[in-house]
Length: 238
Length: 250
Ligand code: SF4
Ligand code: FES
Image 1 (tube, each protein chain N blue to C red):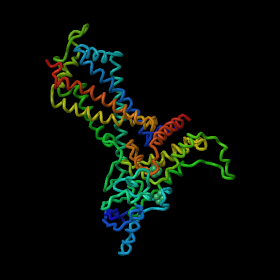
Image 2 (image 1 turned 45 degrees about the horizontal axis):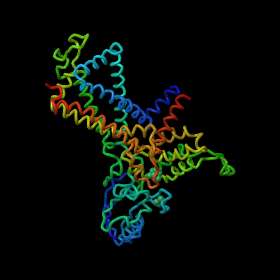
Image 3 (image 1 turned 90 degrees about the horizontal axis):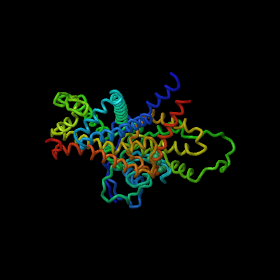
Image 4 (image 1 turned 120 degrees about the horizontal axis):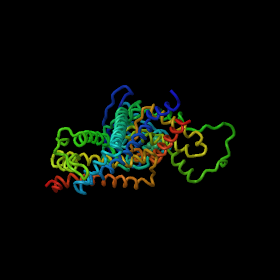
């Protein structure tokens, strides 16, 4: 084994090394969410806007870009989940319980990270099978094809898919709960990135914590606006 | 003052411990927490029992030997105070007080409230020092250090190595202690030459000693009797990352 491999392996094995990788993959996911959100919000710009955007996404780089993004995100997610599970298992193994337990400062979000994280993972699996792979629905059928200028009847109707998806009360409530849990996860995750990468200090602490809250709130309002509009206000359902 | 104590009793590392109840009666209001335990112990010994074992030494908040998790909080609820400097006047007459050892996998119980904190010594031995030649003492002002750097180093150096940070941590992480010891030296000219080695070796020793991983709860900072800042943890994360990169490229 050469020195470089040894150094990489001992970084991967060390507690701080793992945490830095969790933070790094966390940043990628933190950046992905607003991108995803902006795409979704095109729903409010009319039927064609989101379908055009989806078509562009699927054809960009001769259809390669979407796969690069998918594989990249999947890798990031796998590393993030794998390492946090490893870290948690180790923490559970070495920590001991008090007969009289007390918490001084740790926020609820920070103490729930592994559970919020695993719930989000379950949601992501459901979400991808629902809207990307489209299992258990007929979103791949001809009823979900539409036309755009230059494309006659062969464009996937993302607009209709979203409206139909959020017309189900059960799905929608699950979605809303999952997004809320995601935002709890983000509020701690955002600030933690700065601490783990050594970019936080007592001076910047409050600013970073507030930015984390603001970010989580923005993501929460943004993602929930769609199901709320569709299910409760009938947006696009007529 | 009168109290009811719920105290962790455990014969040795191999036996199972349990909580036992003791009355603490006629405690003078000016007594410290350890003096209160002394009074209770005298009564236990008088009755032919085995006294409650607990660690202590200086009893003036500087040695880091006293421990005890009091009502779930290492060193008790008073901020910036060691158990030996905690006084009974901060409790209410008639209170029930739970007293447990500093709990962590890396701090095995030796007896009752006494735990083995030698894991900290192993971490210090791995890099919590500067290598200097022995001989005549160096001139105190030979190396200029800015006031800010000296202050930061001193703030970190006030860590007394008590282990409360580990005991309070939901993950039994030793990051506050290790980072205080590392940044005390890393940011001084005397410690800078060994900075990378220090960060890598101390973290490795910490992981090997069986401590958990920091997940940024900041419980450590909340209980530390010396108010060591979690800024040190951020600094160690940064120093470690830089050291790992330099080592990989070296
Ligand atoms: S950092 Fe604070 S709590 Fe931890 S060992 Fe040092 S003095 Fe004790
Ligand atoms: S006995 Fe020395 S610090 Fe408490």
